[in-house]
Length: 166
Image (cartoon, rainbow, N blue to C red):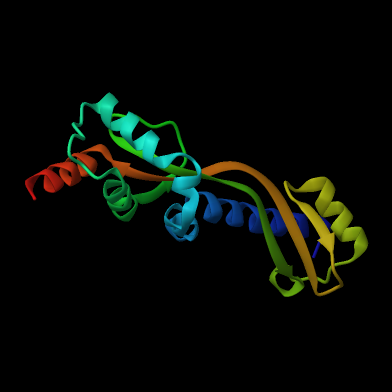
């Protein structure tokens, strides 16, 4: 195997990991629990929800905002972070991916790692590689992507209307 082939295979592993961590629903769902575990409260979720409802013309008179917040979190979902239309959905929480780290076995590249090859990977791929022996190396990739936990505006309207009906 040539060094160029080794580098191409390593870059393909980086690209695959990046695609998975930034686009695959399973990767996003790994952040979903954080909204209900305090992230919403920590980032003034109740007041943001009230402001959102006011801006959207959703009347909250007689509504228990804590209960509404719990329902909004329950009925929310993860989506790729992006500019979004606030008329369509409320941003419950956002999660910065930050860094992608992955262990790579030498067998997946078809060659053993050496300090020289890891140096080449650091020069020629998008990731930073760390040598951990001839059988294993790790790459790290800075990532500026986000996962957003959102709830649709229509869902919030329906939740408020259901609460008013009781």
